[in-house]
Image (cartoon, one colour):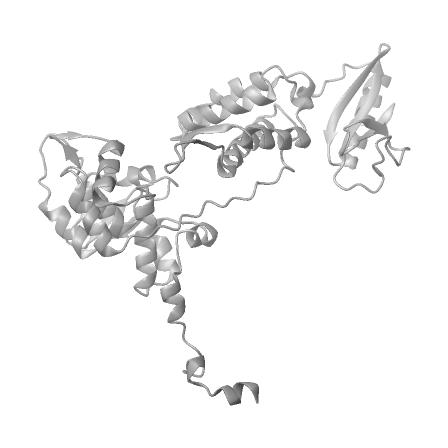
Amino acid sequence: MGLLAECPKCKKRLSLKRKTCSCGCNIGKSAGKTYWIEYYVHGKRKRERIGKSKGAAENRFREVQTAKAEDRHIDKDPASIMTFGELVQWYLQLPEVLAKKSYRRDTEMVRHLKRLLGGTTKIAAITAGRVEGYQQARLAEPSIRKDKLTGRQKMTAPSTVNKEVITLKTIFNRAIRHGRLTVNPAQPVKKLPENNVRMRILSTEEADTLISCCPPHIKPIVLIAFYTGMRLGEIVKLTWDKVDLREGFIRLENQDTKTNDGRSVPLHPRAVDTLKRIPRPIHTTRVFLKDGKPFNEFKNSYNTAKKKAGIEDFTFHDLRHCAINNMRLAGNDYFRIMAASGHKTTAVFKRYNLVTEKELSEMKWLDGEKSSEREVDTIFG
């Protein structure tokens, strides 16, 4: 009875007096170990998972001992009672979660979490090691996407698994905030390394070819995306009250953007000219219409246009990369571009910029000379 330490390797729970586990792991010197407490109530052994803090384990054990001495009811650790399925069901019904724009995507990620972690699994049984096992299991599963060259199914991407684990951490953190849990068992889990930076940038000539191959209702959308860097949802749902052609801006409000932060987007002259040519209907405030009606999806039309233009491996979102990269090449500083694109951090913003070998070949040197102009004798003495 007392405090226990969980072996990081085999997950056995041992007394703090034991420095070495039967698996050979030195628990005494192991960093980040998980603490449990063990006690007896009416002859039955009880164990509670506390977390990484030894102090918290000692405090909880003293609380239990005091409660036993005073013959009071001992509250059980909620993590040992609640199942993961119950927690997920509670989370998905929260008003703030139901109001999220990404609710459908969140439910899909939760479906995978529940499938592999187990809906009947007690929260106390979900450890950092188990979540890391989930990561590897998901990486070994095929994705719904297929490779465009081979036609074979791709494996689940690390970025997808990272989003799912972030969702899991969010669920636990929200439960802690509402007093339903005391610790987040997934907090120590690290993100998987990602290598999904897009390297495809269209030249102005390629973009013009793509736009010319598009059907009339999406031509202006593709052009606006190429020159402003606005997201798909921000463009297709754009209303005329947000467009200021006199000043040359599109002014998005909080509810219009992915990050829930409004921003002013400067318009390229070609974008201004395009918007001026679009008629304004009486029956709707939406800017972009198909046969007089608003629309949100045009994936098939866009893919057909790409084939006609001879452009491969280029998504609609890559147009945003093109716009941001072109703004940088035009000499704008990062802060100005980030204000227009809506990026909050430079880490994400830099992923949208591609420095080509052509740019690198134009590197400026302090002495103003190219190395080829120097005499070989001066280099070697």
